[in-house]
Length: 301
Image 1 (cartoon, one colour):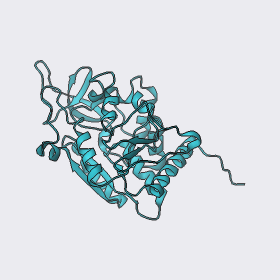
Image 2 (tube, helix red, strand yellow; image 1 turned 45 degrees about the horizontal axis):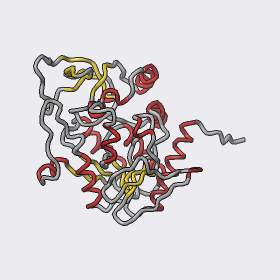
Image 3 (cartoon, helix red, strand yellow; image 1 turned 30 degrees about the horizontal axis):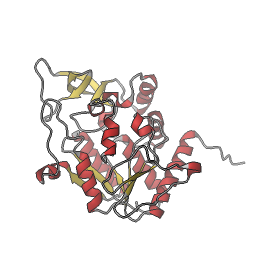
Image 4 (cartoon, one colour; image 1 turned 45 degrees about the vertical axis):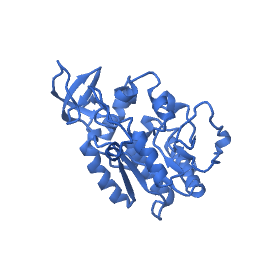
């Protein structure tokens, strides 16, 4: 007799696919926010399954800071072609050139926060009414309390004290003209779930997730990759280490970790033994105790 027992990964997959189909059936102009990181890669994979054999019924949207890891951009273009998806790219540099965003200055200058302006402009320009995000509740405390269907007002802002209940898996998609939703189909996944799913489905990921030799500098307890966007402070030196990325973001604020993990199985073992949170190496989360919540209130991912 056929068994209908679902593993925890199959249950998570089924929930995410259900959410994606709900969005496709309910909203007029959804889009999937794609960074080339493991979470957005898994989202695209799930979307492909949700609508197979049809093509994805919504485009991917990448907000490009111009300070990305080159390996991520190369992977992005190859992956999108293989998935036969439509990719829309909006550049933070364009927002700066138009005077919509102001480049930060100083030793720890980053374009991470500036992405919010470009993202909100893109949502308005493309008339996006639901944007899939790869945020998970185990990543950070502001994300932990955000609903799966996260309402944004006409200014793209999030009000964490005025969220809608999602009882019995029912989602409230009511909105006024000019408002939109961020939808997080991976909310109930953990970092370990993501890696186990990547292993189970044999999903390809960018090479920077695996151990490799890279030139780094130590700053505020983090290991930052050398790049044209990093200015060394007095006393800081460059050295070569074997490292890998645990998260992928702007090179100016994404720390790498020392690692010998060269396979997905090695990464899973490493994550199981880790005592530092996934975003513990992100400088953008260390700017203040409520850095993520402050950015999300303003319209960040």
